[in-house]
Image (cartoon, rainbow, N blue to C red; front, side, top):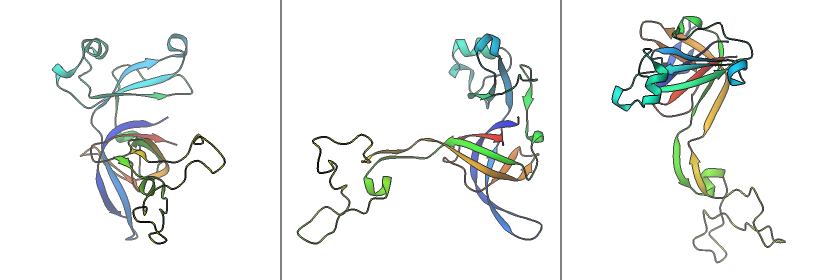
Length: 203
């Protein structure tokens, strides 16, 4: 199983040998280090814990310092579940050498937060007509009771907070890898804003 953690940079275009431009998202990888190996016997599941990036020592809790030991002061820690026992060891470094152009991957990240939104933007409602005596109901949700009930049915789509969800996009391809700059270019769009933590896993 191949996986890595990076940060979203921006979108761009990568031109292939045939001259066709492919939209791609650039993801920069900052030092991925194995910080812990989870085992079935000890933890009840199998996983590899990865530390990514760096953070000032004063912003690391004492418990984290004891856990990281001399491996570094990581900004983020993530775990990747495994079906089989891992062959990695604590302290091993993970880089982009394991991937190559053409690999099919799935990307997980947190989508952009859009705050509190109405039903038109959040769910695509059509709103109400301006005519026939209505004045300020262009973007209102309309009836929510169903006509035969005295309560609102569970699951009714209404206004609320939008975005900031964990989103996974499958069947993306690695278009190009820049080993010198530690940047991987993934086809299509990746969830999140610039700087969002991105998990890349080979399918």
